[in-house]
Image (cartoon, rainbow, N blue to C red; front, side, top):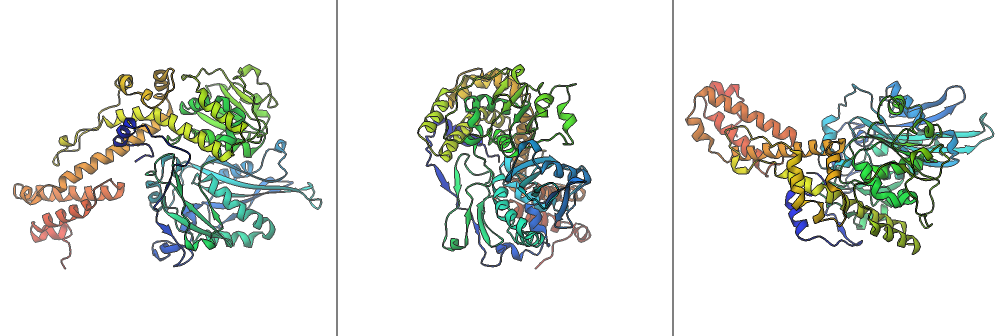
Length: 604
């Protein structure tokens, strides 16, 4: 299931709108993986895991990118040494691992980027890694076509070097969007690496290869270079908007760092410069509009892009997004061409060149140096795009977009009051995250309800016919349901909700959401069909049919069993055991020669 409410829960929520306070926190009864057996926990005994399999469950590789006066940026080290990267991928990593020279990032800087994976590469760990995705929320599943790069960049004066500066980046390459977790990991590993060089990198990789695998819902204890981190990866079954606290235990005297989240960025800090426009930004992201964030540094650009992508959570943002994008990017021409409309993508940029290159884009967010969250932000109107001449233009949102929904003054007042009262940034962040969650849920619940109605009735599922088809999604039928069961049931906001839905139904976010829901419902139909077959008395059916038909039945049931295991259908407990017993009993009713062909089960 998605991290959105299922149809059963929707009725409940509509009947009794929940009052959720800041203290609403559910403690996860998650199973804890401890280190009593060995450094990797109880899974150390798994005979199927080979060296580097655990490492690969978390990371693709670790790169060190340095600056060479003759070559420019270059990948100096890739660890583990057997890790494969194409030349194009290495080039992308080189250019994306350094801030633009105009950013002036002295000292240590952390940011993240995202780039396309080279086509044609298949991982031998595909099935092994898929099992972790099964229970993950949609926004935390492995990225199939892209890698994330998590960067720790150091630039310090060094007179002994020709250039006068030491410049180097340690970069973690992963398919996992755990931005907070990997940045915390880098804070531990990178300073040590810059001091002790490669032996330290080898030690860190060996530690990671002893970690338990990243199972959603389990509390994981992760030792790294003498420090111990404790985290919990969310599951799709968690109630959206609740914090899953990692419980303290008696063994915690070894734990140095407990992370409250593996992936969430601080929304309030990111949106603080433009928080009068948060509702409009939510609409732009929801509708997959082309957006560019112009920021003074990669840290601010990447955090803001990630905040934008997460503001429609638990809905997954299905278009491309680049937390940090440079003129050297392989998609630079594709994304900046003026011969066609800008693509559905969110770009984070820092190079002043983009102010000119992307001035034809419809929506531009210009962020100055991030103010302290305690400072007051003056209300700014949305500016016309023609006013944006350079990256030195004033901070603000430049767009001709007219929002569909009326502005929610309450959330602005609530956040402004927090700024005046010096409310902690974490509390402001919680208020804003809750606001976005409730807005997204109010929007998506009518879609969830309508899609649930496309499911055939259970009484129409016959064990001896193919499962019935889902009814098609008809836009006008859906629109008719909004009159009585639209977002007005859960949201006080007025405005052109119908126009917002019409636009949404044409964008990639709807397409991705509907494909996912359709896939889940097809699996549910297959599961109900299989359960119906298991309730039948197959011996009676066999007696009424010829041997050929019986053999055909066995083959079909075996296919069903394989499909159920491969696709992990949502079956009632015991269904697969029951199905195997049915297959065995039908085979036993056949002549010996056929039993041999159909792999007669071994008798005890």
